[in-house]
Length: 114
Length: 109
Image 1 (tube, one colour):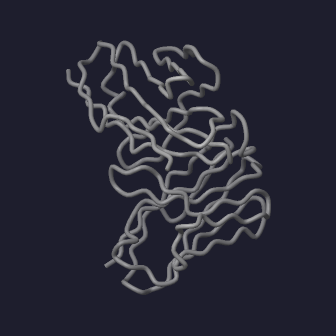
Image 2 (cartoon, chains in turn orange, brown; image 1 turned 120 degrees about the vertical axis):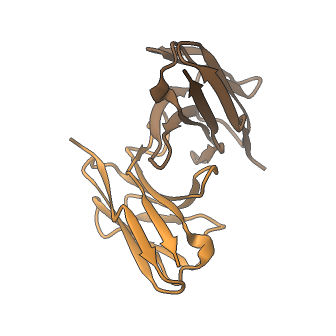
């Protein structure tokens, strides 16, 4: 089945220790998104790629970076995690950002910062 | 600014009908989405509205009024598995999805 895969599902890191979250997709979608979601809050868009074009949201902290080496893979790097970065990180894909195309989400990575 | 408003929490009884409202104020409109999110899981797509009116999909229906900046999600014949959060999201003029915080729906037997 075509899908969005995120690894790991659970990640524990120490305060200030860099961490990388990964996402892969078999849907061959052009657009990939990274969201941060905290409990009972709306998903917050961090970045998105339309093909190789990178779009950084204005309020995404510099501590967060992303890479998309090819169509299938996307990575989220948190350079120096703080306690406030503990959250669920969701990767999503879409065929196209316009129109009726919905976003398909991976299962998420729950990040704990100790 | 852009804003999506939904009730924080609703409670309903198994077998009943519930309506979850969403009002929005966005810079432009390119469609409204409803997603379901079970606790600890990722959102899954439920419905899309871009024109005024009702879209029906099995037990779920979604309504849109663009002039009022209003949508609702109607769930019929509620089942225990419908206990989840329901998120309303609007595509703005830049095709960015603006998300609501979600409505937590609690189903009681």
